[in-house]
Image 1: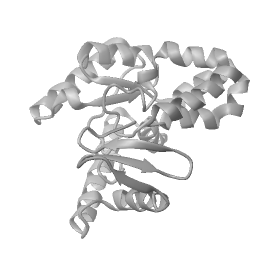
Image 2: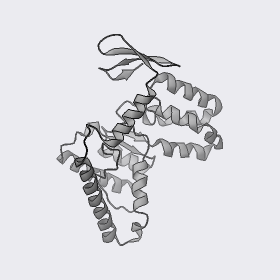
Image 3: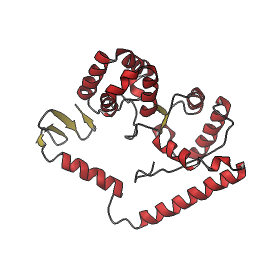
Image 4: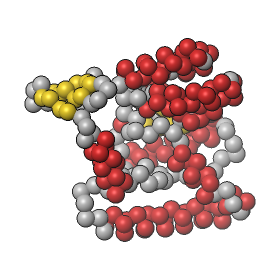
Length: 239
């Protein structure tokens, strides 16, 4: 994803299906390309569904990279096992998006009491792989593989083309996107992108009722109408 929350394709390939050797080869070529461009591999985060071939390829080629799971795909898996999950979907997403332990524990507690089998499945998968709060590496605020789904939607008709025409269609599409995005970026007059401006504005409006009390130069106590917490700007953590 680019700085304006737009899709930025890095690589594409064609395989016969969900085959471990094909995914391993694809990831190997991707790693070589990233390293040749000076990318610091250890800072990467890869989000995917639970496909075995994808997971195996990542573990072989990108063993040091944080491999997170798509929260939407995980939710679909839970729904396929228990129809009751749909009634508590709001709590599930709140739990996935929670930054603070207290917020996560609240929603996790609700689900544990109502759909205990599903919460056991989530724990078995690994809390750090789908929960923002428990992520032990940087997830960059992305919880799903929606961007990949958008790419699939683009190719839904092109997949019927001969392979060379399919590749040319995708190459031409990427070329057009890069041109349009580059021109849009050249016309920016603000320090951040329009997407970031909207996010900052939304956060600013939500914080108007908060009070901030300093503890030190980098530590502050932040209180809103319902709850409070401490923020450390140096360590970038919330308690």
